[in-house]
Amino acid sequence: MFLNGGSNKKQKGEDWVVIDSNKVESHSEKPEMKAIEVTDYIIEKGLGKYDFIIVNYANCDMIGHTGEL
Image 1 (tube, rainbow, N blue to C red):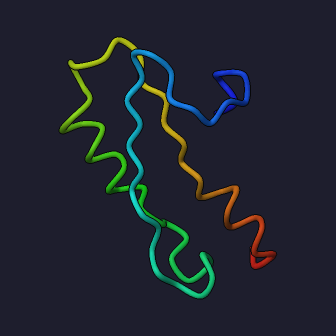
Image 2 (tube, rainbow, N blue to C red):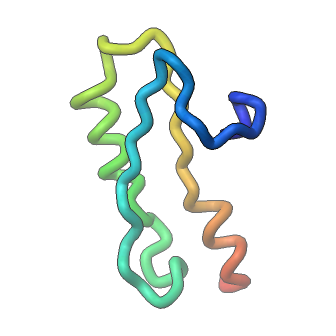
């Protein structure tokens, strides 16, 4: 979102993939979140297909918001 001027609309040539979050009360319960699944997806589906890949690993941001460091 921040690399395309704050727009949350997909631009021409972009592919967006969303991997659903864990169903937990607080992300501090599973701080690894879905990092492995995200990485696996990139390796399996993205490498060789794209010249440039942007990934948002939200772990640090989301855990920081819990206040449970």
